[in-house]
Image (tube, rainbow, N blue to C red; front, side, top):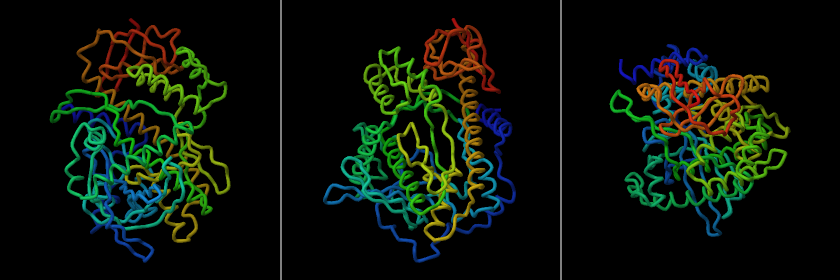
Length: 484
């Protein structure tokens, strides 16, 4: 068995153990096999926006393209942003076999060796993907922002779009940072170079405004698994990327527009929220270690300012601090927001209005949101009752947590493969978790996280320790350390 096959088998077992189905049921595959092409417009309300210079920016290997973007500057320096979202609902009808499977898993699962898509690939990478040079149905989220990133107006409507340039984060990010050439796919479209610059400026304005309001900035702990054929060669930290920030900021704004649109139409919605931090006292204690004093009540602006100061003072240590604070903030969840109720907001993003709407090929809550939007546009009642939405919110939160645990386990299995010959070596580590379930530490090089099975007394999240690799279990994704 190759290492890729071994990791796939581990992922399949982990998914089944956590209530996720790695295989599509025969009725779902039969539904997809019967499809003869991408959905087509059925009414006059669908606008034709195929002539605009749309582009997608995603991972190099991604084919399940959920969104396109385009920017239109005006004479008064405002910028109109249009974000086109794949119309998945046009092909995946509520209650169908494909929909039932998607509703069970609720998300695509990304593991080092293989991706388990939420939708069959004929849909997610073709018929419902905003694929390169293809005409596709979409829901367009349009908004106008001023020079300071302030929202001036917005709209949501159905449209046909065409992806003019399929671009990738790495190459676009390198070009924006003056570290590489304009990607060939962008250079082939006369307007695309200026398009990307306008979108980048707009995204930076949105980002600056969010941080002024208290949005938190972290260093990503993403890693890249480098395979040579079927053999895992290395696990490397993923570099921060300006193109990723561009898309992130445009999508956060689009999700806010979607939430306000549904709220304004009197529709319920699924909101994505991160409530006030679960361990604010520990975050305050962590800040005091660096000579900072945070207020007694959770304050995202104060925390954001502290993080900015630490990033400037010690950029090499900021990744570890980021992971620590993320752990202490607690996880996000889906909640139902009935019409007329004050939303709880998203602490980490410092936004009041936030839902998930921009990735319907990969996340089921986005499909639900899309159906709510389409019902509103057609002046039909909500396709979901409040009780159905509450059940979905609980289920989606639980399944997303399960998917995250599967992904972490398989990532640990991949690292365990690489370091099993290094048992007995010592490493510098930072404590990332401390609870009755155990004390966990993270090593930066190579990037790995495991349990401290001896010498954990007196340690808390954010503390540093010298540890020795004691044992690994590839199948279960266990990496055990003892305090050196």
